[in-house]
Image (cartoon, rainbow, N blue to C red; front, side, top):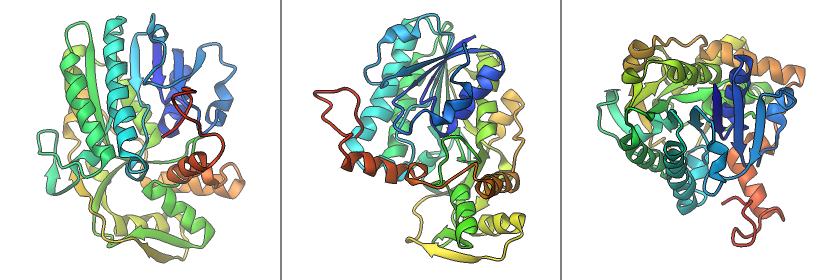
Length: 339
């Protein structure tokens, strides 16, 4: 198949693009490449890969010609980044993705898969499923919900639309992110050793390995239309719902390192425990990785030098660097900017 991955050089996108190429698909990667192309270094010479340095808000829709599936991952990628400029976050994460979905349908794409997030649940007690009320507390979460609301009605018998609400992602990627909970915990252990934990550690959060995210996309891409069309799925596993402090203790134990807890911030306003039964039952999905494997994988990559901490590995820090550098110019004069 011919697949377009927006945000294909990102933390999740780069892993997904590599797996799709390994499966023999032709892949178009549309990305701003603010973090470079290093995440795709091992596949840049693959003849089945096409790169498009562009923005979902104004890319030439001819890119969608002959595309069978669109996996729409392009976005400002977490809650803190979304608050740098809320209006711009809505412009990209909501309006930009609506544009991708509508153009996909216009150009005859068969399937469109939206990357959403369990963060839209905000703070709630009990176990939440896809029928539960939502409580988006951040611009990032609100933009995800607005995108869901506008893309799902586009579904019909010729255009399959699916929204995937992912748990918090962890694990090694060529475009590494240490601003994610488990990844940041491992970095703290490697450097100090201290595990950073946001107060008060009692908040619940679901997790999923980045490679399992790629598997989820492939399951949806290949699944029968009537089971997934117009549907929202929470993507993760019931077994990987964790309170943050016990999770930190698990990560420390898995690496067999003596450590201290490094408390930071104020009490987290987000806490949610999620049911993933619908996705498991629909596409027979079971994650292959746990935080233990993910933590060991990242720690070994740090020890061997395969993975190096830098400003680029902290999304908000890198965006701020771009904003403060000469690289940032007016969108009015050059359509190759950020925030």
